[in-house]
Image (cartoon, rainbow, N blue to C red; front, side, top):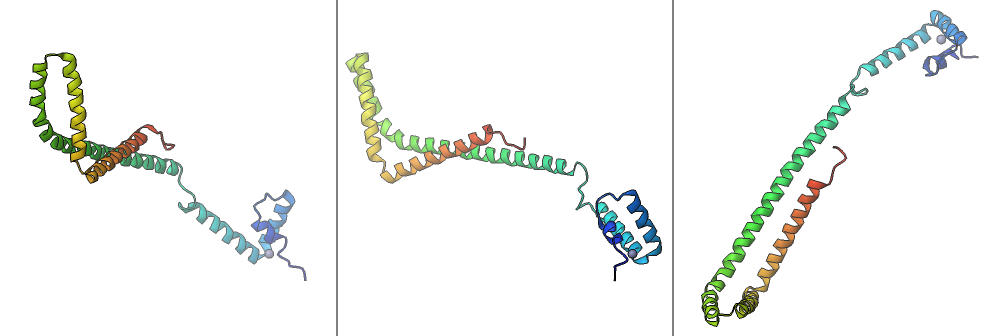
Length: 180
Ligand SMILES: [Zn+2]
């Protein structure tokens, strides 16, 4: 037995445009077939419901607004991050300077007046500079010997960290992002 609802059911579900004759035949069938009419109405009701649901069809401008908000958030986050990275770097640099000064100062206090007095006595600018350089070299050697190796490692690590932090900050400030 031939299904009397065909090809009308197929025509109801198809997304393609029906020809004039097909459309005419479908309308005639719908007037005498309750089943196909119900199907058509149910399908139309579902389609209008889908169109009215915001989740399935985003309002115009929604995506653009969301992207703008994301860009704003990212910019704000990056500014805060950059600020704290800079604060940490400055703080670290100051701490490092204070630490170095605190370690060098006692060493400078003793030899410097002696060196100056000796320099005045020698009264030769060239030898003064040369000896000052030599003194500096000796002092450097002394400092190096006085500071335990673990502290040097700590200072190197601190300097390395600062360098890395600055590199990150520099990168964040200079490299343009796609969102802008
Ligand atoms: Zn039918």
